[in-house]
Image: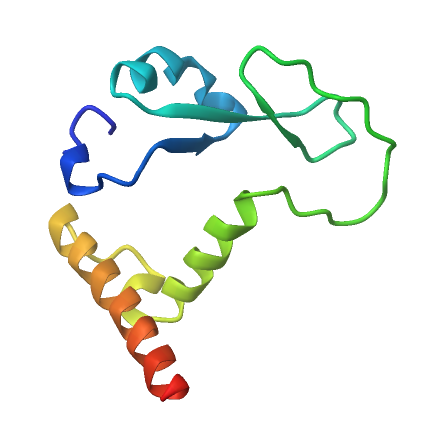
Length: 119
């Protein structure tokens, strides 16, 4: 996915936040001029902590209940906002460009609603 992206369209993107399963993309990200930050799980009882590649994960006390991971909640929240749009609640489209257009329209709708509320 990174190889097919035209990063000149997003000149402000400098860092990628990825799950532990994507830690092998460090070389590809650095060749594109991006920094990669990976979520690590120090042991099975913890949902995760953010550490830089090569650093050791800190020991954390075990806690019960739901604890959102830093940075990941931003993505989950955005997916929830997009899911409020009927066309984005399911994957109906066969062409990825059409799906991308609907994502842009969904975010545009959200931003216009916020601007109208602020005015």
